[in-house]
Length: 96
Image 1 (cartoon, rainbow, N blue to C red):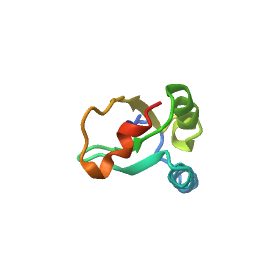
Image 2: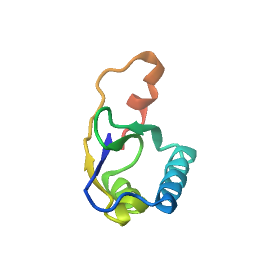
Image 3: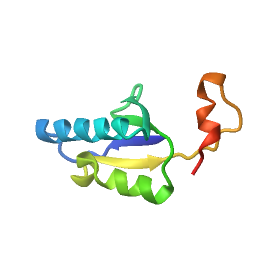
Image 4: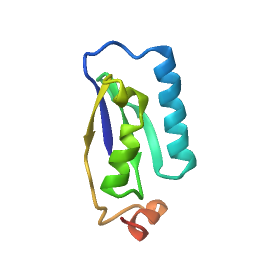
């Protein structure tokens, strides 16, 4: 799980938000982003990521325009699933 928390720097411009959404879409199209959305009760968002090494994830996060412009800070919370609902069995099969 990746948490993107607002830093107090200037609010994201419409251009940065459009680029951020395109960046998210690319992650979904490439199959490494499984879900994204706003953080409940907080300014920022979260991304459920799968199938990337730590180095590849850090490289991808650095390409997010909101990260590059210092609008959000990044917190990565790693988890190695030990048990999942059968609909999520793919999470057990391919762990980096």
